[in-house]
Length: 534
Image (cartoon, rainbow, N blue to C red; front, side, top):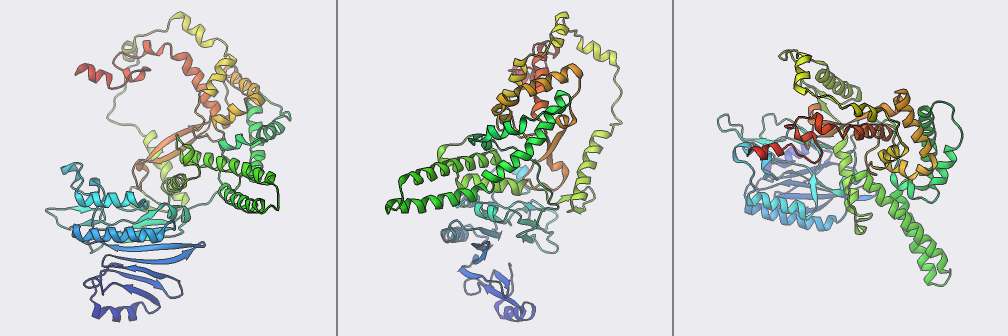
């Protein structure tokens, strides 16, 4: 807590208002005691460090030490250099333990965090550069938060200035240990700074069962294809499209059990297997057991480490991975940070009301897009269809119809499946393109029959036709629905059908699209016409 209470009055306030609390202040090191740290009696905290701009305490949670640093940075840049040095020293003490630090650094990190950014443009001052270097050197980041971007203002009407001088920062270990922690910046009221509030375990509004998702590392298991084949062989009656979706639903149950038996809690399995190997190595070196068992455990550990690396890679959506990156803190921190960033805990509607329940937030999202898609712009006039025909003025050549209606070949279907990226996010059915590629020898014929059935009967099973609409944040700390970008995630079968249709249209697209619409032509860019004009 940042305070301006003088030392002679502090004891009376602490004794009257915080009788059942422990307190740590820095009056001995700073004029008027810039920082108070308070915690309820009965909670075990140890004071680690005290300086004029920072107090650090240490507690325990989930069997791990937890560090909290209360920051009140100086207004003077040279004095703040002492704070940066103090934080670096605390970082050595913290090591790899969870750590959070904040709130008033009295300096902002980026020029966009100041209201004069639009006037001055991008800039970096020496004080900002020192802060940026610190955050990069010790690998700390902003905790995702709800509330205003600017946390301080000068309250002046004529020369108004607002900046983000206050922030709650965490290290990557904190994000892993406290995945449900939540930060909110409240309105400043009569003060010039916003107050920050942190919850360690503010759960998301609803905890529904997670849908099935295929993880690509399952396919590397030696028994994977046998498990799939055993589930797939029993006959299903119905049309090819129904047969395929029914078998896939049945396979989900089998794969869930397969994952539970072999890969559940994959990171814990790696740690236990590594410990088992170390113990076995001791027995081998003592001559009590042969090297054979040690080699077997080492092979098991390698398989589990590779599976964990693939799991983290798929979760983190990192496209390139080096051998040295396997099982590193890098991937764990990315996954933890993504989870924090992607969970929607709070939304604000058009009236400024804060929505925290699942039902209220889901209704707000539905209303937003329904209004956007279902409303007509009164200023737009109806267009004469004949005018559009004159503008397009194009007719497909006679051979085009023959090309469009010719039978779909096995090769076209095969190519439409295998050209999809292995790590593409799955649709509602949860299966990735890699799954279909790995299992093609088992049920490739079923996929071909289902796709052929669509083109012959103009019917697609609703399970393949459904789409997940994922909301991806457009800004660092979204608060309204418009701060999210909707992304469609379709099933692999749906994409395959679309790719076949597109591949047959590709040959005629250059003739259909006007010359000035270069962005629709493969190999051309929307900027081409601009460059030609210049």
